[in-house]
Amino acid sequence: MYAIYERNSRFGKPGAVNFVDHENGGATVELTSQRGSATVELFGGLVTSWRPKGSEEVLWLSNTGSFVDGRARSPRGGIPVCWPWFADHPTDPSLPAHGFARKSAWEPVHTDATTGDVRLTLRTDVAVVGHVPWPHRAEVSLDVVLGATLDVRLTTRNVGNAPFDLTQALHTYFRVGDVTRIEIKGLDAVTYLDKLDAFASKQQVGAITIDREVDRIYLGTTGAIDLVDPVLQRTIRVTRSGSTSAVVWNPWIAKAARMGDVVDASGADAYLRMVCIEAANAGPDVVSIPPGGTHTLATELEVK
Ligand code: TA6
Image 1 (cartoon, rainbow, N blue to C red):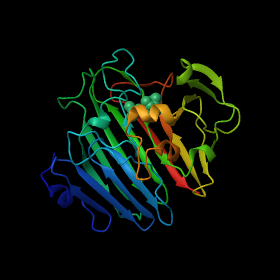
Image 2: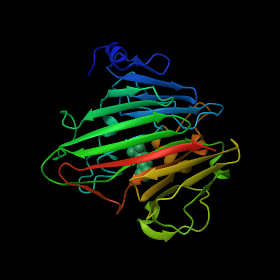
Image 3: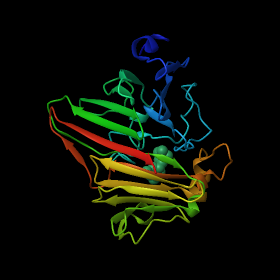
């Protein structure tokens, strides 16, 4: 962990990359380019905001929780890094859902603003004490590239001498005008596992619309997914690489109330203003990485 202000001296780029240090050792990274702005929290490697030039905020973020007080839970939302497992741990339910990367300290290792895009690369030390027992040796890094799109890339390198399996996701929370009026296109006829029906295998018919809790892992899909939002009058295109599965989730009323942090500045009916479309390696889409091998899971967001 760097001393306060050291990050800016080592990785800051005037007018492009600025670190705002927190007293708990974390920091907010402010990315600015001619094409928009974004913010990333070092705690958890969490992208919390993306505002393309001329557009409103793309990501949804709860207004509960805190990044400054390390004892509090981070706000829900942004693009949580789910690693080295997606959802519940496959064998030990006592371990944190979605792994431990989103509860870890990340630090900058590289920044660049020479191409018109602004790039930030973060790394977290998997071996740092406090991580749950994960019997493998890996380097994991997160690239955030702010250009005309927002490109987020999660790369895992196996630096041990035995292969290991991963499930993971870039768990993007999108801000929408009214979730009951959106359509999610690009998954027609795709098979999905319905978490709300004991992971029964079903087939998507037409565009996804939401009028109840939805929690699905779409399988064998590598194409673009479009979030069509008539209220905010925009379509957000989600493309993925290193992934053949995608997760679509909205908690709806009861689960949102149980969670308690599905709240935003507009109030407690925030479930109406968010939907998750996640680039994933989830369900049977398990990634096996041999010694010395790498895998990158990426999601690129574009406002059309
Ligand atoms: O990606 C969907 C999901 O697995 C849902 O089942 C819900 O649990 C959501 O993730 C949020 O998980 P979290 O651990 O962030 O509360």
